[in-house]
Amino acid sequence: MIIMDSYLGEEKKVTKISYSNILAQVEKNKKISSRVAEEIVPLFFSKQLLNIKHDLYRKFFSKLINIEESRIETIVKIGKAINNRKNFLEELKTVEVPMVFIAGEYDIPRPFSESEEMFNLKKDSLLFKIKDAGHISNLENIVDVNSILDKIL
Image (cartoon, rainbow, N blue to C red; front, side, top):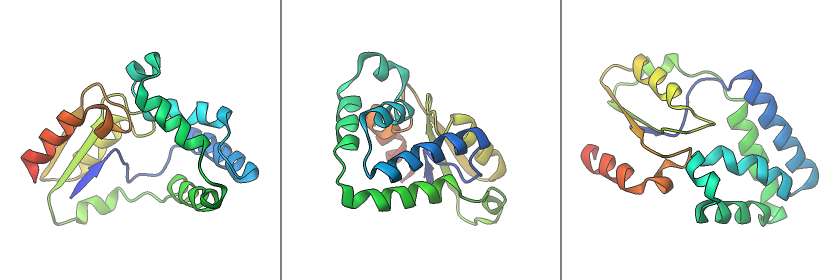
């Protein structure tokens, strides 16, 4: 089982408030404004990409501000479910299959330390840090991600 750029613990209070505010704005306006996209996009990429406004950054920004209104309600519901999730860290100990934890070196919403925490709770697991990558590590460092997947699958 692979857990990539994710965390099974509860969202931290500070980020929960921040994400709740972003979701409230999106829900109220029924769109992702440029201002909100400017808050969201930096969470997903490493600082190297942000400093040069890389093509991945620009494409993601454009997709966010152009999401159809008909999809906003579902996006907000999913966002709230993720933001308000319960802590499932203890359940890791009951999983009977090997697990692999993968996270970007510069992941902001899901810092590598969270993957380390899960790794330390789950015996017989593997942990990988994706160099020079943020939250969407498979886009920022596709070579390293594919190399890891080739080794473990």
